[in-house]
Image (cartoon, rainbow, N blue to C red; front, side, top):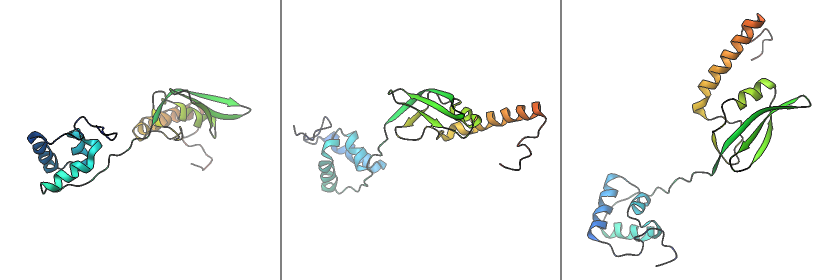
Length: 162
């Protein structure tokens, strides 16, 4: 076996079933890389390409998309130090840190519901997954509405800013 062997069939002779699987996979529209993986020959992709060429098969190449390493938020706590608000984040890989926020309200918004979120390592924890935004904004609007009804000021206040 060569050092390049990754799949259990790398370097082995082609059986009739392997050839039929190669034809079917490419006919179905799988990339040559997906086909090599399906055939357990991903370590000898050039060999799979040669076999497809030998059989007169057409194929397309689509290298697999790499997924970045991630870590999960295990703690998201609003903190204040010397009048500066932020969010203290802890992750399941032991990383931790405080990200400054512009206000207590922003810190609360950024920390709310974040425990369990899986984010790519190196990505700013304030970047909230798109699927969570509608419910977070709805809760924030509800919170602001309650605040304004208690204070008697309309939603958005009278400052004229957004």
